[in-house]
Image 1 (cartoon, rainbow, N blue to C red):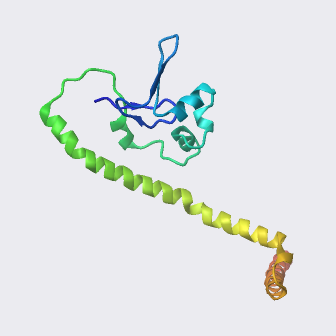
Image 2 (tube, rainbow, N blue to C red; image 1 turned 90 degrees about the vertical axis):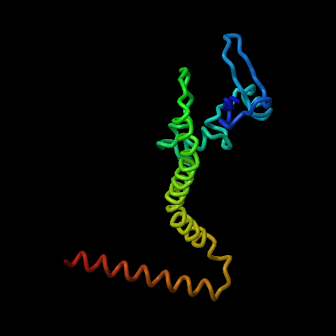
Image 3 (cartoon, rainbow, N blue to C red; image 1 turned 90 degrees about the horizontal axis):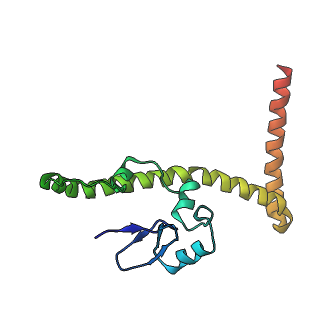
Amino acid sequence: MRLEKCWFCSSTVYPGHGIQFVRNDAKVFRFCRSKCHKNFKMKRNPRKVKWTKAYRRLRGKDMTQDTTFEFERKRNRPERYNRILTEETLKAIPLITKIRHERQKKHITERQKGGKSMSRKKDAKELEQDLQMLPKKDTVAYEAAKQKVIVSQLKTEENLMEE
């Protein structure tokens, strides 16, 4: 059983599923569903469509370079299979998938580290812009805290200038 990859979104196309388009120059394009086929006919670039794997890899959302991807690579040369080697490979597949999942988790956590500080900066900026929408007692406390910070910064700048 041969599992193909969708030309547009890079998902798996199982036998008997999807659409196949053959161009005049005999190049074969396989699509997993009509959504991918329609986007191909509209001449859309998969790297600019947000739900495709090409977009996610280009933007750093998915891992692109990992040693576990070597096992999935397509090879177009005939090989003589050794029964022992095939058995060892089948035993190693669950271990490889486990390693890949752990690396993906690590990649996601590394990618999300900067998000919290960015969201705090965004919230602080929004708070400064929409300060008039808060009740009076909250704005007074916020402005007092803000003034304290400004004063401490000015003092440190003056101390630096004196030195």
